[in-house]
Length: 541
Image (cartoon, rainbow, N blue to C red; front, side):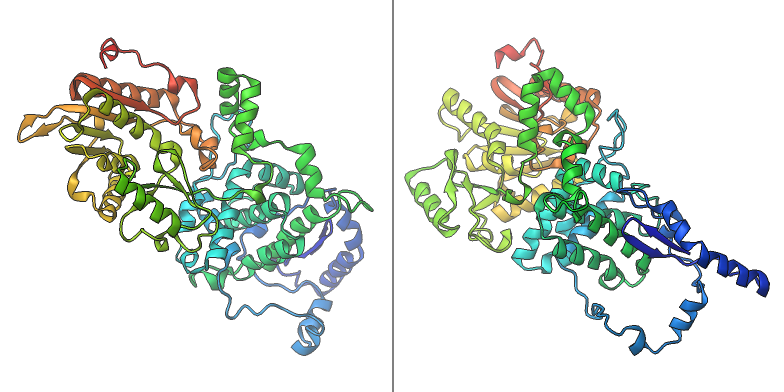
């Protein structure tokens, strides 16, 4: 059956053979040929494409539709393909778009809803953090620095603008998201990646459409052999959606694309954030500050976003000799790298290659840590120095320590001992790996245990603790600019608050020595997670 969908023509093959009755069969074929143009109008929905759900599962029998196609199949290949050039997929290799789409598809497999699919926001699923999937992909590691950077830009743009992208795709496609099938996540990830390029990254339409559609064509060659090829009908469907988005908004108007019109009239940046979170922010901070928060989380020009990488060094608490080492490292990292307050280094864009190839990595001189994340440890060290002067005899505990950035800061300060407590087994392994690279693993005791049940002991006796850094589990909404997935989550705030209270009370009642100092830190933008701790003994800290 031939169906015209907007500007896209798809050829679908029937799963049932024609009737064996020769008279009825001929009459049926004739009816199909005669009424084809009439039936096409049934599928012409302005601005929307419809892909029948049954074609999301490609396991259908290949039945020829009519005599014209049968005769065409008998033509020599040289006649059939005359004037047509098909891409050579024999040696197809993954590229930046390929690894980006596969990372998004893998991440989307854990949840099927976007933040625009439900108005309440209470049960909204969020896309898993696909950047982690990307970095774990072996093919991503084999790309050159430029292609890795573009792949990361594609993934981060889709994650950041997921709500707007899905809303626009829903305006173009009759049934979106696709129903579950063998290729449903792949098709959805491809649609999102193409839309991100056309709407936000301003990639030239020819390149964006051709290269993104090519991902579907090489899917079965670039992945393990047990993956079936993507049906040609689905590939043409995706191609048609992209051409619709990149086409003119109205006939004769070449100034604005249809996608740009939808972006302006149908969406706004708040679509990328869970509705419950927007409501909370407006209640806590007011509409004006909420708009400013959204502007910071969603830059107006995605193509201008440059990934920001900050480094902490072992020389933070500097002497004159350490200051010279910081300057030497700064010069090695590139002339456009800058030294931030408190000795963090913001790496410039001229430094190429992977992080592991940067100067000082193998020597364990520095670790990646956002400058804002260094503040809690800096406050604790400064407060203890003001109170005690000499730090070399003080015992410190870092609660919820993984991945180890703050722990490494404390170890660099010269305390007598630093204990890192982490409840999560997987995260604790990463903590230990980081400490090994930095040469700190022998100087730090790592405890894998829930903080609210841990007691400090040394040689079988209770050990005094003079300082605690408690970076409590929270909604992490303050990190939304770097981790847009947290803006679509629906955390159980009540449970988080209970954990925070138990940890804080246990640290003060049981662990902290009299007169000691505890720094309580959270990266949440919710007032309920930042409220003043109520405890009768806290005023003694």
